Amino acid sequence: MELEEGGQGEAYALSGLTPGSEVYVLLRRNGVAIFEYLFRVVENEALIEVYGSAEGAVKVTAFAYAAAEDFNASQPPPASLYVTESEVVDGRFLLRIEKRGAPFTRQGRPLIEVNSTLVLYTECSYSVIDLTDYLASDRGVRLTANLDCKKSSETRTP
Image 1 (cartoon, rainbow, N blue to C red):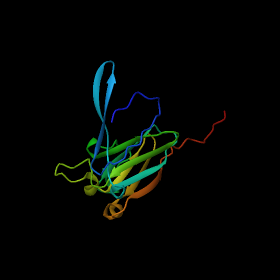
Image 2: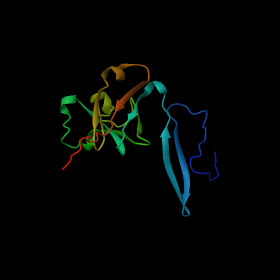
Image 3: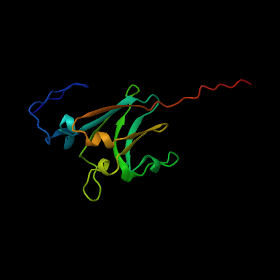
Image 4: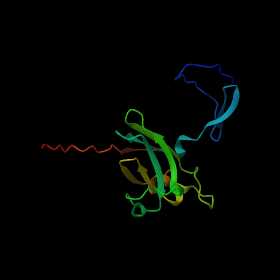
């Protein structure tokens, strides 16, 4: 399929894609051809979606911990536990995590199967979700989380 240059925000419907298909795009920028990965098709039953509010945040990042008590809010999360991230647009975010997908441990197992405590992290808030029951389900899952940054309502007068 070849597409001509379109306007900003233009969308295209792709049909006939099956789970496991990968979609790439060939772009021309400044006379240079760039081959860029867009996404991989997965079955809806294989997804965990987490969406919600994150007013005041720029992005939401997900990390997989073995247990909630392993998370220390005063320390930045280790890069080895990174799962995915989402930009916050108009105060809302959406994370999609494939149940049996990347990232993988060194032993080749999906990280969220090994570490099933998901910590959603912003620059000013966090939320902890236990995924154990959701990973065992043969259905897709949609969860909500509120990661709004708390603004101080305290006012001082001289």
